[in-house]
Each structure stands twice: as C-alpha cells, then as structure tokens.
Image 1 (tube, one colour):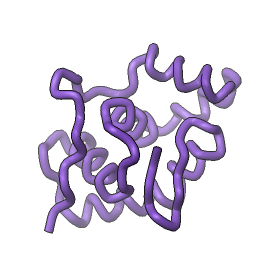
Image 2: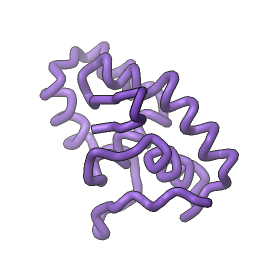
Image 3: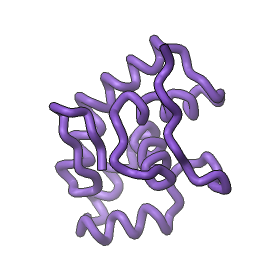
Image 4: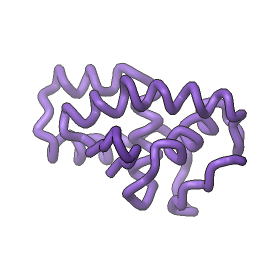
Length: 114
C-alpha cells in the first residue's frame, strides 16, 4: 500500500526551498551563516525543506519520505524500498538535525513533523 500523497499547493513548483523561504526559516530559528551552510549542505535536507514549505503541517514521516523520494527520483510515485530508505535517513539523520537547529519540530515517537 502506498502512502497518502501530501496535500501541497497546486501552484507550487517542485524545486528546492527558495532562498526567501529558507531565509525566513533561518531567521526564525536564529541560525548563523555557518549553521545555514551545514543545514543546506545536504540535498535531501533541501528537498525536505521544500516539501515542508509547500505542505500543510503536521505531516507524517512516511508521507514526507514518499514526497522526498518522488522528487529525488523525478517521478510522481517512488518505489516502496526507496521510500523506506529515505524515511530511515530522515528519521535518524536529517529531521533530528533540522529539529536541533530549530527549523522544524520532529517527534520521533509519533513520526510527526511540524
């Protein structure tokens, strides 16, 4: 069974987070230039931020992973193995980093991102 698609803005383009979107997030989180660079060093984090900026929150980890995997594979639907791999990377690496920096809130117990 494939995850439910994330409701997004139908007029939004599927690109990495725009500099304006990223700047607003960074300003709210109070990130230094060095922290901003570390956050955006990962293409997957850039893609996750883009998805989250176009998504109604909260969002479930599996839904976010499906959207990120689809964008990374340039398709509307990613293979379930790929989604699982992306979900693992988001859960263990990217979302905790983004949460530590104050850019998102992530509850690893429930798998919810806000």
